[in-house]
View 1 (cartoon, rainbow, N blue to C red):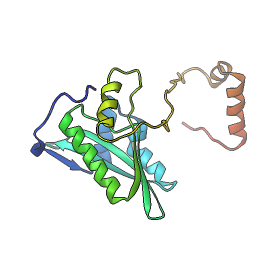
View 2 (view 1 turned 180 degrees about the vertical axis):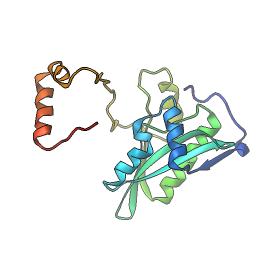
View 3 (view 1 turned 90 degrees about the vertical axis):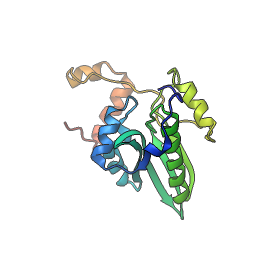
Length: 186
């Protein structure tokens, strides 16, 4: 994602709230799509007091950029959080329109802050242009909430072999979670 290089005439772009199926198809197909940008994650977060809203910038019905925003309200104010997002187009006009829509949502929700955490490693060549682009629009750097890296584990080997390959501390954590009632199911 190289920001910002292309532009669209603003008149051809629209900001809207897509339905879950349309949003999930976009998020799954986006190069930086992530589980935390899925509608299923939004439904899960609803069980612990968050509201999920999805904003998208589209052209001719096709989503170019978007964000699933988690909103937590308290005492008449709110916080807005976009975990592993927004999912940007790499298009100056579309991405700026998405940020304006997020800003309007934050204003209407009486948010004390809007936090973005794009799904992009700091070492990625696109990270520096994105960083500069966001700073130029008034965002400030903050420590991330989500882990800085993810470990992928091949689940094909039997569970006993997976546990044997882990450190003693991790094996103890897993066994303790089972004793405390954490259930794993396929």
